[in-house]
Length: 390
Image (cartoon, rainbow, N blue to C red; front, side, top):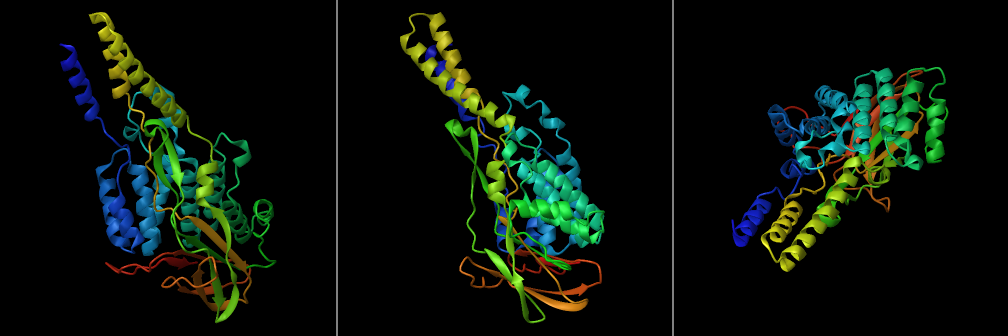
C-alpha cells in the first residue's frame, strides 16, 4: 500500500468512529419539560424493553416521568430496580483496564450525585407509600453514595438528604428522633431547622439539573453546565393562611461539580493528550521521513492518534431537579388544605405552577408533601399530577 492509500485508509477509519458518546434522549426531555409525561415515560420504557448499556439510566428517567404523572407505585418500582443496579459498581471497578474502549459501550451507573439522587427518589416514594422506615434507610444510603468521592471536604454535604433523614427518623420514632441528622443538616445550612413539634413537611423540587457536556482536549473531559430556570422557592399556605416559604436545601449543580472525579475522567484526559501527541508526532515523522521504515512509523503514530477514542461519557440523568427546597411547619391535628405557590427570585409567583393538597395531620406523625415546580401535565391516560401527599 502506498503512502497516499495508507493515509486515505486511516482518515476513512477515523471518519467512521462515533463522534459522540451520548445516548440522545432529547425528544423525551422536551416531552418532560412541556408536561407530556405519559409520552416521555412510554418512550423511556420502550428503551428499557430493548435493554443495553443505558438500562439503568432509562429506569431513573422512567421513574421521574411516572412520579410526575402521579404514578407512585410505578415510579417506586423503577427507582428500586435502578437502586440495586447503581449499588453494584463492579462494572466500573476495572475502569483503567478499558483504556481503549468507547465509553458508551459501558453500562451506565451514574456519577456520585446521580447515585445519591436515585436514593433520594427512592426515599421519597417510600415515604409516599407510607413506609417511613425504608424512606429513612434510602436517605441514609444516599448520604453514603454522596460521600463516594475523592474530595474529602465535599463528602456528605447533601443537606436535603440529612434533613429528610432526620424528619423520617422523627416520624418513625427512631431512638434519637432524628436529632443527629437534623443537627448535621443545620450545620451545613443554619436555615435548615425544623420547629419543635413540626408535623408537616413540604418538599419542592425546582428546575432541571446540570447538563453534562464534553470539554477539554478532544472532548475528553466531562463538564457540567448549570441549567436555567425561574423557580427559586415556594410560598406555602394552610387553609388560606401563610405557613411559610421553603428554604433551598440542596443545589444539584453544586453537588455535581464538587464530587470527586472518576477514574475514567483522568483516563480520558490522558487519552486526549496521547491522541494529540500521536497525531502531531506522526505528522512530523512523515514530513521528515527518508525511507519506508520511517514512513511506517509516522503512519503508525498518526493512525494511533486518529483512531484512539478519548471522548468523555456525557450520558446523564437530565430530568433531575436543579434544586431541592423544604419547609417544616406545625399545624393542629385534622384536615387541612395546603397551597404551594412557586416563586421567582424576586418573590413573585411563577405562573401556572401553583398546586393544592389535602393533608390529614395526625397526632405524633408527620404529613409528607412532595411536589415539583413543573407543568401540571397533559392528561393522556388517567390522572396526571406533579405532587403527592402522605
